Amino acid sequence: MFNILLIEDDFSLYTEIKERLNQWSYEIYGIKDFSKVMEDFSEIKPDLVIIDIQLPKFDGFHWCRMIRSHSNVPIIFLSSRDHPTDMVMSMQLGADDFIQKPFHFDVLIAKIQAILRRVYNYSSKQIHIKTWCGATIDYERNLVKNNDGTIELTKNEMFILKLLIDHKNKVVTRDKLINSLWDDKRFISDNTLTVNVNRLRKRLEEIKLGRFIETKVGQGYMALEEDIL
Image (cartoon, rainbow, N blue to C red; front, side, top):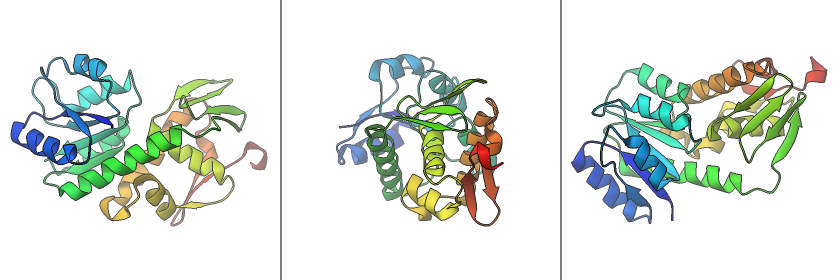
C-alpha cells in the first residue's frame, strides 16, 4: 500500500479524492495545519504528494520548494488556474506532473499509477551505478557526480537521463519518452516533456554536462558520449 499526502484545502474535493483513491488501496493523508505542511510531510513520509497551487498561508509552489529541499518524492500539482506558466513553474520546481481542474478521476488515477510504477519499480532494479561522459551516475540515490561537483536529480529527471544514456548516441523519440514516463500520452501536453528535459539539461549544466543532451528538432533527444564530440 502506498501513502499519498494530499495538500488540498477544498474539503469537499479532498474528501472525494480520498474516497476514490481509497478504493484503489491508496492510503490518503491530509494536512492538519497549512502553515506546518512540512511537519506532516516528515511524519507521514509519503510515497507521493499531490499539491494544489492555491492554498492558505503559502501557495503550492512554496511547499514544492520546501519538499524538494528535503526529498525527491514524486509530486503531482493540481490547479484550477489555466495559465500555462503554472505548469511550467511546477515542472521547473521539480514536479513530476500537472493536472488541470476540473479533471476526470480516471486521469488522476492513471497518472498516479504510472508515476508509482515507474518510480518504485525503477528504484528496485539491481544495476545502480553507471558512468557517462566522465561522470558517475547513481540511479538509486539520484546523484550525478564528476570533478565539477555533484547534483541530485528528481525521479523524473533521472528516469529521462537513464533512458537517454541507455540509448546513447541514438535519438530517443519524443513519443518513446512520453510513453515511458507517463504511459498514456493522451493525458500529457507535449510541452510537459520539453520542460522536463530542459530542467534536466539545466541541472546537468551545473557540472558542465548540459551540452551532452542534444535536441533533435522534430525527432527527440540524444545523450552524447564525450569522445564523439
